[in-house]
Image 1 (tube, helix red, strand yellow):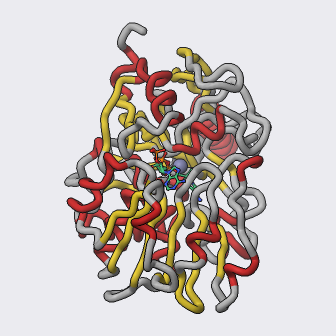
Image 2 (cartoon, helix red, strand yellow; image 1 turned 30 degrees about the vertical axis):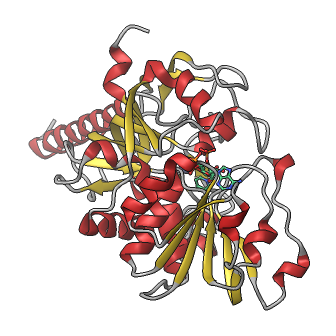
Length: 381
Ligand code: NDP
Ligand code: ZN
């Protein structure tokens, strides 16, 4: 062999070695990751410890060690199959915060050790009209955080677990100074209420109502007040009157007490309803001013759709439903919340209390938001 040939041979061999090492490193990265959490094995409110696998960390993915997960009323609808047939075993949870523990090679927005949050979506097509408008929640191919088939056909699993792998676009960096144990609900309850308030450009002096004062209602009231609106709260639970007053509402109405409803017709610019069961939407529509709007955020079970009398819509009153918010707006919501110190009121529970928490939620005995402390996953059942 002459020396030039030897040199070429050597470099080709070296290159081949580098390529092989890179490929095998990528293979290692794509190796499945063992995970554990709590799952409902069939429809119902019973959870058991459950071990499963997350996909490997791809080049656009982030691995998050979950620290806290909120319990949204949607989780209850999903395990009860209130809207549609569920995919079981089901690990619910779409209000997630944790610490980044691994990043794919293209990741720039977060680094290992950062705190990060994930909400109701973990992917979308990225190309359709809605994705281009930063409204990934209306993409026809959105991958929901759980109870949905991922692009590889494997069911997505949510935040009642120790870790999650998510496409970077759906991961939001949380500032160091934020109160971590209160952050998780922002990624569903927060964005779901912030988005329609921004859509309606709520401004000082607007007269606004929030019907249903639970996890979403708590956030809606705080955002609307921070935007300068005068806020009235409607709920069925007398025990929540003082909390509403403490937040600075103009009025708390217990809808079970008819007298308190007197004189409210024609008074609101905007009503957000977070009510999760059947109710008479006509009562609220009549309380709107001419050209006012009612936004349905609460999603009652399919056999409990709210009653909407056409006559109550005269005066060009509008009614429509809104679904969470896009990722750009989620980042904006997080900045707004941190800047104005707007955080949910939470009760932290160990994961072993899931069954009890779901029962309380179903019976109207839950606090504003339960948040699971994921450290408890390692405790005995
Ligand atoms: P919560 O259970 O925390 O809050 C619901 C509140 O509504 C409770 O305070 C409840 O009182 C109250 N309520 C029940 N019935 C009535 C009534 N007839 N009139 C007035 N108030 C009533 O639920 P969440 O806030 O977590 O979720 C609310 C709904 O929003 C659910 O349907 C959920 O699926 C949906 N959702 C929708 C999203 C979207 O993108 N559109 C995103 C997230 C959630 P009590 O506790 O005493 O029963
Ligand atoms: Zn939710």
